[in-house]
Amino acid sequence: MSQFIDILRQHLADFRRRYAHQITPEIHAAIHAMLSCRCNTARVSCWDCQTCEQQLEFPLSCGHRSCPQCQHGTTCDWLSQQQAKLLPVNYFMVTFTLPFELRAIAKSQPEPFYHAMFTVAASVLKDFAARSPKLSGDIGFTGVLHTHSRRRDYHPHLHFIIPAGSYHSGKRQWRKCQTHYLFNAFNLAKVWRARLLAYLSDTLQLKLPHQSQSKWVVDCQFVGKGAPALQYLSRYLYRGVLPDSSICRHVDNQVSFTYQDSQTRCQQVRSLPAVEFLWLILQHVLPKGLRRVRDYGLLRGNAKKLRQQIQLMLAVAGAV
Image (tube, rainbow, N blue to C red):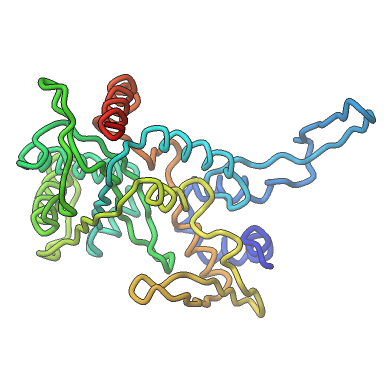
């Protein structure tokens, strides 16, 4: 089975020549980390057996969040932390997609642009919840940034997983959303478009394209229990955007990988020249320190005590 790091090592020189002006310092750092991952260097971990006194040394992992060999433990830890926050209610997933016309700006200035996406989308959800007659209280949600489509093209979007209900601090009551409908997706898209364009032009003072789509895409879906949705969100968080198991062929400077088509739900194969394949994957390396997972409202870190009270309240109500 081919591995991404093996392909990177074999075609690195050609990749650097072709994309010399597009490789950011973050991509350089990611390449250096992945090439030194689990290699025979001075950085090793030592293990001693207390029974037979045998000593073994293993090369260390690089720990980079774009490395497909690393961060399995980090992914499991994040899943455990999020599962501890789960409420015994149904969940919705709301997806905010960035239109094609703004993706070049996002790629050139990723850190402020992604922060703007999180800020605006969170404000939209909070305001819709405050005005909703079904909720009218405090909600919580977790947002995750994905920068790629299933074909691994550059396609920034935000997924938010939201418990179906709200907490009324005055009455100390949890108000349950009884239906499989949360917000109107078309209204979400209108407000998302207006607020993000205003934020980009007024706050960030970015020069926006003259022509932009009048209709943006926001999807609001009922997903049932929250655990499967968390599993989906964690898939590309800390181990790169393409697992090694998806690379099915590397022959004659051509790399093929499998993906699931979003329309047919069937497995498809995409083939690219090796150098183009490397850029397809490495263009998704995020700026250093950028948080691609953010919690809001009842799910934020300093709301743990209140969240435990709500969990206990719902557990007692369910038992009764």
